[in-house]
Length: 150
Image (cartoon, rainbow, N blue to C red; front, side, top):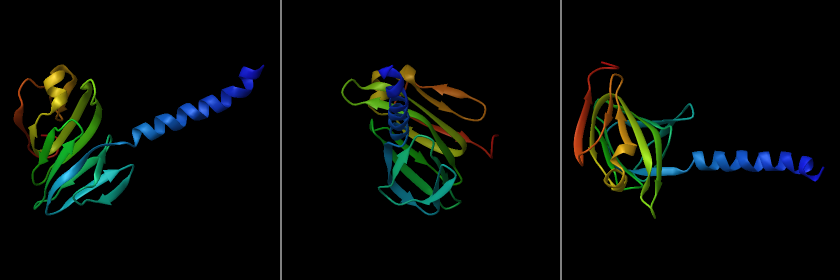
């Protein structure tokens, strides 16, 4: 009978823990040039150097824009002009260096210098475009998507 009284409390506790984890920063903006905006949960937010980046964020650069983002494992993502980048998933344990990452480039260019996660578990790191999912085996590469979804 006591368990029935505790059940609503336990469900509330689990829900609040999951929500807090989803909003944790996974990296931050390190470099900014020109027009750049960040879309989070349906809102367009101003971008400045030091702004935290979270899973689910969509970063868009304008015709004169570029942005450099450093993730928690020291992966460097640099999006060029007219780019749209989505952080699909990122989990990293700095103690074990275990985790996973998935990022989508919807349009534009993305230069990547991989960090600790790719060195420890390259099979857990992926990059997507509208047409391809890329696994990685190197440490530096560039992805280009011409036009929205081309």
